[in-house]
Image (cartoon, rainbow, N blue to C red):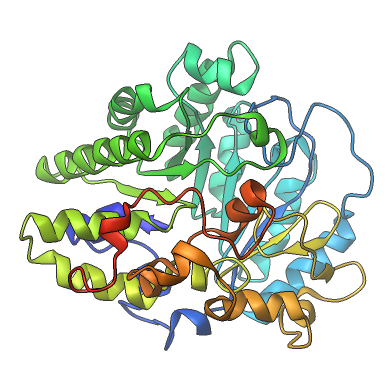
Length: 393
């Protein structure tokens, strides 16, 4: 994740210690962090989004971790000291015991976030979520009104998600918005920021598309379209800060966003540029994320480097505890991902921003080229911008 509000505006943000080594309780290095764990509790979903990485639908899937297996997993994650568990799906609230599992997690001291489409959050569910102490609830919206409904495959999904947001806000629950950048959604970016302000949404994550699951059939943005989208996100974030009404705004799954922001700061002669560069270099981008600072456990119990890399499994928590799987130094792929600088090829490897970007996102490189170590085709930086000797990096 790239924190726009922190890097471009210099404002302290939640998770600064974990993300940038800045603040109380910061680890010695990004690589020393325990992973934030995404747990896909269920593959079942009441929507059918065109970009769904798990290719989920409104049906029953066999083999999901049972309640007892889920509790055992959560006990292990707590003992292992993971900083947070993100409960996701499919649609996590389509699973009937999700909030009971959340209660167990909270009893073990785990920090929880919830990633949901928001359509199932009635007033009672909102009160339960607030009582459990979720750090925040991320609601997936991909555009405003009919744009969202087209993207999510169900008419009325936008209105139901907005109702869910309002139910959460009414009980004082922190709410975030999650949007995937695509040709369907970038035209709605200004309208999305207007919505964030109007509804009092405190956090927004803008995800770059990763072609996995049904997302393989979703059109990618060009480099120019991506940069234009980022310029809009940067502009609107700064406008919020200037008005004294900042939000935590992040981009996700394209580590080239950090160098792009640095270049914009440096070109403007902004004194934040040097500090931003050092914070991002500490973070390490992709080199400290999938397989190191991020882990995914799917509905079957398989452990992956992230939720988009289902073709890699390090083991299954039904057979071995997550803590053992994640600490297994004999696993060649796990160790290769943690030492990816020795393996990444081509344009990424020779980039002057390698220590900031970390070779970008391996899941997208594999999905688009068939080679996990190839340069990430999602990079939107120009050859001149990444040329060694061209500036500070």
